[in-house]
Figure (cartoon, one colour):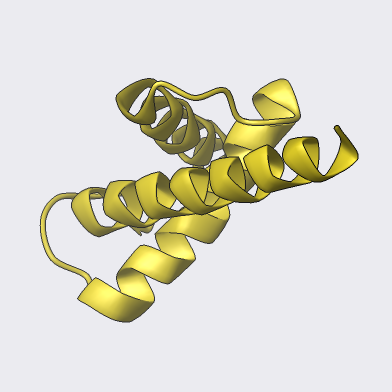
Length: 86
């Protein structure tokens, strides 16, 4: 149970950092940060592998790179959806 809670916290921090680095808000607030952190970590580790420091089963650098890519893609999709409704 504690490891799951730790994973949620680290996933949220990774998603939050990705949003800060990109200068874009992640839809969904804290839940959005956690989701972006988890999905970004999965994408980053699948593409880049498990190198660098590991915290709560997250390889921090690939996870952060994956989360940044995810935030970028989501922001492009959200921007396109806003333009199509105008």
